[in-house]
Every structure is written in C-alpha cells, then in structure tokens.
Length: 274
Image (cartoon, rainbow, N blue to C red):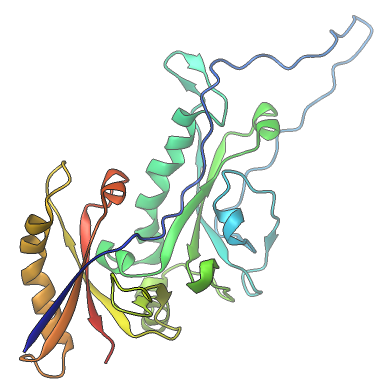
C-alpha cells in the first residue's frame, strides 16, 4: 500500500549578513605628519589559517565578522575553516568597503561550492546532511589595515537553534561511514507537520531524508510539476528503504519561493525511520 505525504517546509539557511554599499572609501583622517615626524607603521592583520577550529555559537555563525580565537580541533569546538580566499575590493573601477554587498557576495558564491570537496562527499550527500558552510570577512578596521581575506567554515546544524559540538576535524567526514550517519539529515516528525524539525540522525528522530531531486528551469515551477518530477525518484528511494517494497510511505518536501530565489533548485524525499 502506497502512502504519500506532500509538504512545503522552510529549511534553516545560514548566510552572512551584508551591509549597504557606501561607495568609495575615504582615506583615514588625522593630522598630517611633519617633516620631523615618522608616520606610524600599521601592521597588516594576519589571515586565518585553513583547518583551524573555532568555538562559535549560532549568532556568531550568522555574523559577517568574528573575533573568536581558534582552539585545538581535538577540544570542544563547533566550526572548522575549510578554505581561506582573497577578496577583490576594486570593482567597477572603484574601491569598495569590505561590507559592500558586491564584496560580501564573493564568499557567498565561493564557499558553498568548496564544501563537498573538503568533506569528500557528493552533492546529494551534502544536501542530505546537517553540514553547512558559513563565511566571514575582516572587520572594517582590519580591512583598513590591509586585510583582504575571506574565511569559509563548516558547521553542523543541530536541534533547538544550536550548533553541534565537535571534538574532531571534519575533513573527509562524508567519506567516513560513522560521521556520515551521525550528521545525516533526519527530522522529529513528518515534513509539513507541526512537530517537524531537522536534526542530525545521531539525535532522536522519526524521519530521514533519503533522496534529493533536481528541479529544472529558472522560474519557480508549479507544485504539480515539482510533484511529477519527484514522484519517480522518491518512490524508488522509499521502496528501497522499506522492509516491504509493496508497503511504503514517503513525504515530498519542495523548495519555497524564497529558497528557490536563494538557489535551492531541488526537492527532498523523506521516509519514516525504520
């Protein structure tokens, strides 16, 4: 007997905040040095180190900048840097401030694409996990002192609006069966129901994400078209997961319009946990 549930649910999306583009930078103010004075030397702030671990809270992860110091990855932490890149502050023939939207879009474009390689997993595996990328840029003061880096970190989303504490590095985590299972995407109830909340499969749960399905096109598709696209892959995944291939249940979770505009052009197939 086939039982199908259709759901529309908002996914938690982490992204760094951006400010308004203020235009050209002004040179720092202050009195001019006389011929008998020596201008102070400004030391360029050190760039973050790839592979470093940090103890961040969720509000830290949502911020465009952070001053948290690294901690040993063998100790309790919640984030690990998987890439450090360089910002281009000269766009369109003029210099931009580090908090300009055009500058903040640079790590937003580059960080998510590098995460599957760091975790050694496929795009589908990453989508069905609680791993997500967050990114940071220098403070205005550090940027004025010459900092041009951006930092990409991986975090694990947990229940209750918290980040999952870790005691190991995450490089290659999706290639490790134990870590892949522990941080896979599960839920506390069926998608679309009141009790639905995403949690890592290492926590108490009753539903599991078993498949993602790409949705073609650039415009947000109608619901029936998304259902038609997802029906075959979700059915096959549910049958494979069920004890009896003739008696299975699955739930379809489509992207919202907001998620579609943010780049999520896929749906997720869920099944009850065996």
